[in-house]
Amino acid sequence: MKNTGFRTAGADGRLVVAVPSKGRLAQPSLELLEAAGLNFELSDRSLHVPCSNAPVEFLLVRPHDIPEYVQDGVVDAGITGANLIAETAAKVETLLELGFGRCTLEAAVPEESGLERPEDLDGLRVATAYPVSTKAALEEIGVKAELVLLSGSVEVAPRLGLSDAVVDLVSTGSTAAANGLRRIGTLLDSQAVLIGSKRELGERTEMLARLEMMLRGVIAARRRRYLMLNAPADRVAELEALLPSMGAPSVVKLAEQGQLALHAAVDVDAIWDLLPRLKAAGASSILVMHLERVVP
Ligand code: AMP
Image 1 (cartoon, rainbow, N blue to C red):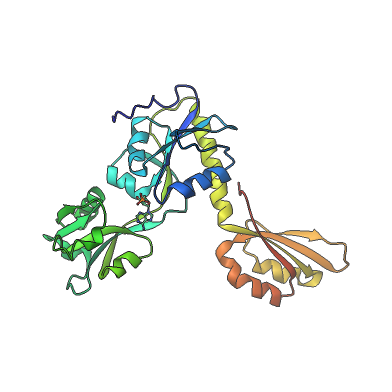
Image 2 (cartoon, helix red, strand yellow):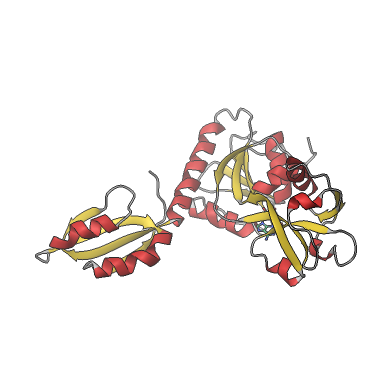
């Protein structure tokens, strides 16, 4: 177990959750926790952030360290990148995928290289900042590469003559392209996840289940929009059939004779196609609203 200087989680009965303190996952993690209804104030001085409306405390630390902290019981749960669980080989449980921090661990080679697939990397030099997950993913396809460990700017390694290929995290692919690299294969898909330890948490078990439920509700709400529309009563059946709702849409009476309102929570990606079809089927006064939580 790492000596972190922190006491073991739960000593005072509060659920301790490790949250990324910096990097790409930090801001969206805090936004998610806030959206889940937790009240807290960040201070520049303290890594411990108590919540004022729940027996929950955050520990702000590097996302890379979080899987091990959870595994070792330094904290009860944490938010980190799925790739970092693979990278630390920590024994933790993934409780929930959080829908942000999406990226892939990709193999890439210089444009002019003749290499086409990750399988072609056998016996070659591969630069990466993620040696454990790279080695594991390559070994899974029977490839033994010589790993060149770098801590950042991995994409310049081939040009410096340090490697034949690179394996790095990619979200848009623009960094690789800007450095004259061509992607040859995905080794791992990742996104931010809530993780818990396999240890017994005692009375904090219920608190963790509640946190998970709250986060799940926010994530489900982010994927949906609440749609309200008015329609002539004789076209409601047609409109209902168009609405891919959670359960059946609600049909609400309006003061105006012959008019009804339809309410439905629909998948956010469906909206683009749906609105013109609803209009064409007689809908008017269409409102599209954000939802705060969806708890089935
Ligand atoms: P960083 O912000 O570089 O400390 O990365 C922290 C974590 O953010 C990574 O381990 C990944 O889980 C995630 N991530 C999401 N997109 C990217 C990306 N394009 N490059 C690096 N990490 C990413």
